[in-house]
Image (cartoon, rainbow, N blue to C red; front, side, top):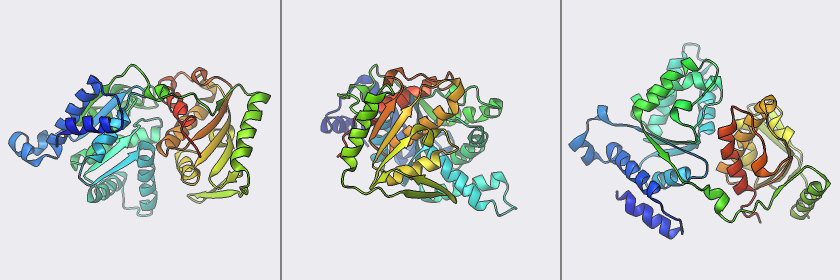
Length: 353
């Protein structure tokens, strides 16, 4: 597979600029492909034990990591699956929940069964937006990915976080360090650097981002809301998530309206946000606050929410206390929150009919 030529043709077809850093990355992906999928190349040069089954791509927000890995993924003619990392971990926890009735199953045995299920279906999995934010996931990942790589399942990772900084300052991080070693041993480690955030440069004017929280902003939000829901009946939407009920009170055939606190100040998370994204094609989120160390849990939920809505390409209208680039952050989430800001630029600007 001539990945370099395919990428240049792809960029020309989609009117995308090409830079040398992207072409260097394509060369590394081409080597990864040869090592893991080009059987004649493998026979000549490497044995199975010397192959490197993972590819970890790190870079700042808006540099095009996902675009390039998506391009590579789409050109692979093998059994494969692309998932946001949140979705992947939810699928694992669901699998554990479904198998917990079997008391004979220890945690390691459940991991073996889960990985075997993956291996039966896929040769490669692609985990977008890889990050570790909670202790439950942190304590599992070492054993989980050791088994995944032992079974020679190929893995693509995209992340804003350097490998050494994963789960930084997290509880019991010393128990997470074996996972970092596994990733370093089993993955190509690449960084993509581009000076400009492409999401902010694509003629984005944040047409549906309103601030501050005052009467004028409220008038603009209500005006937009009335225009888009005119002649559509409001029918409350009830979602069921693992036996729990979640009500979307303002629901107009896919258009929904939430207060920030309803989405991020309650004990809900990625599973709920995925369900919301499945039934909505436009979302209004009002009253986004500034963040600090006191409301960092709400900020973490907001980051997860925007990641999922971005993955599903759902347009947003947002009202906020501060200008988009001026929304403050808690200290520990400052770096990852840059991605959220970048994605809000795009989601509040993409067209909605």
